[in-house]
Length: 286
Image (cartoon, rainbow, N blue to C red; front, side, top):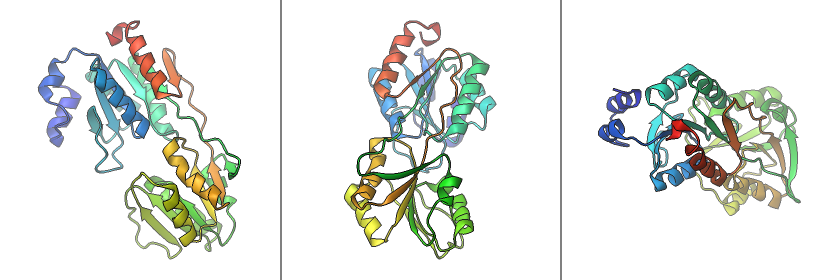
């Protein structure tokens, strides 16, 4: 029994029948997912039926939106765990379509394909570019962005659950008068919640009008966010520009060097085209 089949049996998942997994002769693609672009890619690949598509999520969201793929949640532990899965499931191509700030996952992907010899394709989501009315201050990391926050400010920080505790701690060390409004997709467990911290757990999509209203009612004086790219994420920045609010923007980390026999793309359509064209030239995808 394969690693995936064993995992499906243990968890009771029914994303795809074990029988069809066992007998399928289609090339297999594993998409390291977690952003909307990954779901879009899986949908494109599934619609043509030429590949058996697997999608892997870290598992931070308990009930993620459906994926048109065989879905696996929980991560692989490290590069060796990922390499073991790639080998056991006879994956022909690994696609890194993770968040621009998920550097650890991308690093594991690079190491795993060097261990297994399969090709890697990476989607590198382009960062946002400041527009005419944007008031951005750009920083290389969270620590320096926090250090530059004005004292006694009210900061809207849509940084997600993973950064919540460190954000609260660092801001408290910087200036206890800083008020934080932290937006996450899933609720954050923190007991007690400091008096100057407010959590807002809301799933996207968001709207420009809603964000603008939130900023006004909460008397937000500054935004603190990561340059994650994607149109849907720009809404908060447009709302901030409407109100002439400054934004402390954390720049995307530099992409990791690609191993040999790998390729990177900034458009999902171009990545999809490469996957199909690569199939004709690489025996591992045939």
